[in-house]
Length: 165
Length: 66
Image 1: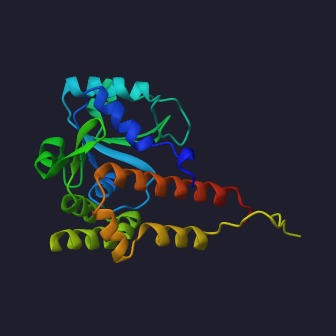
Image 2 (image 1 turned 120 degrees about the vertical axis):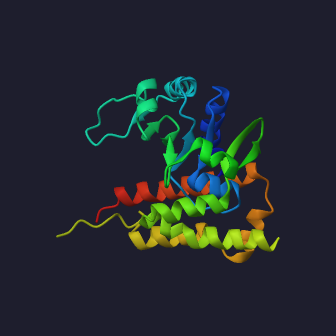
């Protein structure tokens, strides 16, 4: 695919979140990719810190992305401060594609639980937290959906290679 | 009689898409080594490229008559 046709939507979404000073940790396939385990994904998943201030900032960032909940009835439901504060999972479609805003993953892993298992990553002008590959694997093992099982062999192989140095 | 796709149109079936994902996403060991040697911004760029390809293939499959 010619490079000119590719819009860096994940990077742009991460820049928007960072610009709004949202406290978040990238998880899932993007986190694995940042650790070198690169596999295709359709959505950007992140865990946000569930404080009132942060939910306000996240709601503002998502408004800028024209975010709406994925809804089988195609209703126009927006991620407000209250919804982000009260819901555990917000599956969203935005003008940059699919985005999953989560207040926890796996066995009740919140932002505070995940932060010590995350690495700080520099992407151009921005710096953000991204879940380490070992924890991504544990989360995928816990979720254990077909799409999780599909990528685990690659993730484990990359982790093994990293351990070998 | 069942409608056939136009001869010049590519046909993207499940097997084609799965093969494409496997070929590009589930890397051989040399590709893993290459990805690990890249800086994070370049890893993300590769992931974006791969993901965009997946979406194009899925959309094409949805448009292709069964």
